[in-house]
Each structure stands twice: as C-alpha cells, then as structure tokens.
Image (cartoon, rainbow, N blue to C red):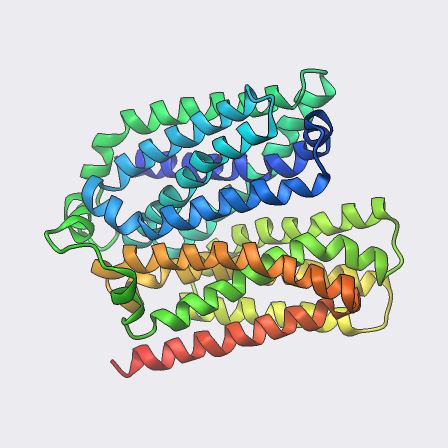
Length: 395
C-alpha cells in the first residue's frame, strides 16, 4: 500500500509541473491571435499567482476539514477544468477568468501534498518528488510544441494537458482509501497523521502563524530562495546576451542548463540526504549557489559564466525540498500544514515580485547587476535561515 501510494504521489508531482510552463511556451502564438500586447502575459501570470497565494494560505483550513487526499482530488480537478477552459477560449478576457481556478487549484494541492510528504516520508523522497516536478515542467513545453508543430494550435496543447489532468483526477479519486491506510517510516499510521492535521483544533490564523517563533524567518528565507531561483531562470538569457555577448539562440540553449542543474541536482540530492541532514543539505546548496554567483563576477568569458549558472541551478536543487521537509521538525507536525501553507504563499510572492524588480534595474541601471542582485538575495536568505536555526534551538 505504501509503495502504491508513493507511486501515485510521484505521478501527482509530475502532474503539478505539467501546467506551469505552458503559458510561456504558448504565449508567442496566443497573443497574436488575441490581438493583445505581448506584455499581457504578465497579467495572466499575476492572476494565477494571486490565486495560488490565496489557496496556499487556506491550505491548513482545507486539509484539516477534508484531508490531503480529497484536497488533491478537488484541486487537480479544478486545474483540469481551468486548462480545458483555456483550450476553448477565444478571448483574452475569458482567459483571465479561467486563470482564477487555475491558480486556486495549484496552491492548495502544492502546500497540502508537500506537508503530507514531509510528515510521512524521508527527505530523499521530497528531493526526488521535486525532481519529478521538473520532469513535468520540462514535458509541458514539448506537448505544446507537438500541438503547434502539428498545426493543431495552442488550444490543443492545453487540451492534451487537461486530459492528462482529468485522468490523474480519476486515479487520485480511486486512491482515496490509500491515504487513510498509509504507514510512515516512524511507525505512525496514515490515520494518526491525518489526525494531526484535522483534529478539533481550529485552523491557525495568519496572525497566529506569524507569532510562532521562527515563522517570520522561514517565510523570509523561502521568499528569498524562490525569488533567487525565478530571477535566475528568467534573466539568465538576457544577462548572457547583453553582458556576455552571446547570441539570443546560444543564450536560450545555455540558460536551459540552469533548469537542468536543478532537476539533476534534486535527483542527486535524494541520495545525499541518506547521509546528510536537511540542515546540512541546505547549507551545501547555499554554498554552491554562492560559488556560482562568484563565477559570474569573474571576467573569464562565456565558459565560466555558463559554469556559474549551472552551479546556481545545482545549488538551488536541495534548498526548496529540504526546507519543506524540515518544517515538521522545526514547528511540529500539528503546525506544519499551516506553516507550509504560508511558506508557499511567501514563495509565490517572491516569484511574482522580484523578477520584475530586477527587470526594472536592468532597464534603468544595468543588466550587469544581475550577480549583485542574486548575491544580496542569497545573503538575506542565509541570514534568515541561520536566525531560524538559532531561534528554534533556544525553544
């Protein structure tokens, strides 16, 4: 039963990644069809992000009331409906309406499933599961490309993913009994662990969560990590073109190595967590990111610049899953769902705000400040994480 449920969770993480990269790959075709400026993709992305933030903050309430399995079924079904809505839309403003359930469906399932894995499974599975998210995020553009190159249009690309999400919804619905019978590595049953998140205690309010010692620090650290990852992923190509002198085609190919570094790094991290603790893995990741940023400062040409971006991706790999997995240890299983929900909201705020901030800096000052911007975010993340560790040790 445990193995079967784990396989379903791996499948769910692939599914979580599938829709995340669709908009970027389809938008060059979509905006021309709708007759809107290319910048309007930012509005859709913002609506999706806001919905995700709202549902992440509500994940504690939803999980306590319904349990992880039901939250997953409802959320994935909502995402499937939104993707199908995208596939039949012929107006930009209709897309904006469908973007609301698109975002709401993503936040709850992400926070709830991450908490479930943190409670029930070892750290290696958290790393490998987030590696599976990378597989899904990489597969999405290929499915969209298949639809576009086959002359079927971007609508069919969304429809293919919608069908996959419908199939997953059915699989998750059939798997609901497994969520009640799962046994974790510490010997606690699934019923015991479900009770942790659904007992008579009322869901924690945002004020109560922020009052937990260390909550503000981990929120800030998570904000910084996701801001760094998203900024690096979004602006790496522009930095290599404008600062490194590469062609746009070369830069696009080399920038993808950043994401390859994250995906491969998480596969490797799963094995390393068998020997090292979550804290050690986070410190290792931060050190590798620092080495990668340092390489960007060196005036040794494109090769060192590319190595720096790959190192930043490799360093990012263990940070996200290990912070999530260590949340029950730092804050207790009874509060982990609430804290993870707020962490996820902080993550989406970071990914939503900081890349545009650097865009303004690049436009009005210089794109050469890219490594400086990343370094400042990294140092703040390190300071906040160390403050969390010190604060939790005094309790």
